[in-house]
Image 1 (cartoon, rainbow, N blue to C red):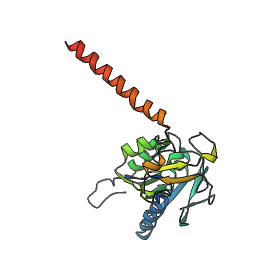
Image 2: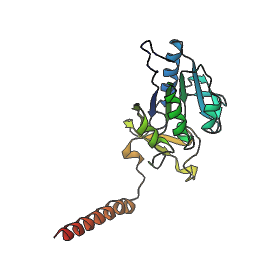
Image 3: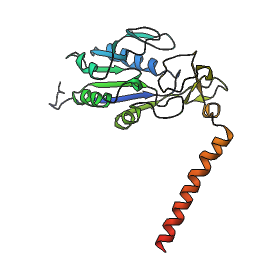
Image 4: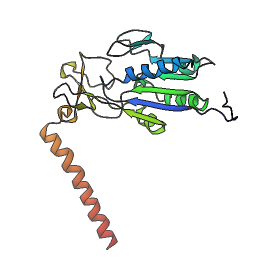
Length: 217
């Protein structure tokens, strides 16, 4: 595919991230439908592990949906890619294996617009799967917020309800297992853990600084 000036068309990588219930999938569907209006061939992929609403559709929490291809791993995206496809959308990208980075790069090098949507953080506030690398390599990043279920303010965190009693990073669920929370109402540290988290690093940093000063003297 070439532009009129003869240059190879440049692919682009877009990442839409945020907590659960922030509208990531809805935004992905919106972008895909705009591409379809522009008569661009699109393909949507989703991890087969995510069958909460439908096995072969991407469905938002607001019930918007679009047909998708479920895949078991990242490489299957390349295997199922059509030659005419110009826009590839990948939902719940945080669930994919590390090869998704190479797959996205390959698609972009082919001149394809790649739209990825996923959670940037897990319920503990840690980075989720391949998201750090995707965010780093992306040409465009949109971090969108939800509404805190406790106070109604802007929410950037995903809270897993304690009754789930599961410490695994991946637990596919929806409103019955998760809530969107602001930082204030998400932070689950006990007071002693909170004090420990602040005191130890500060003490270590202080000791290290003293050692550097002494060495310079």
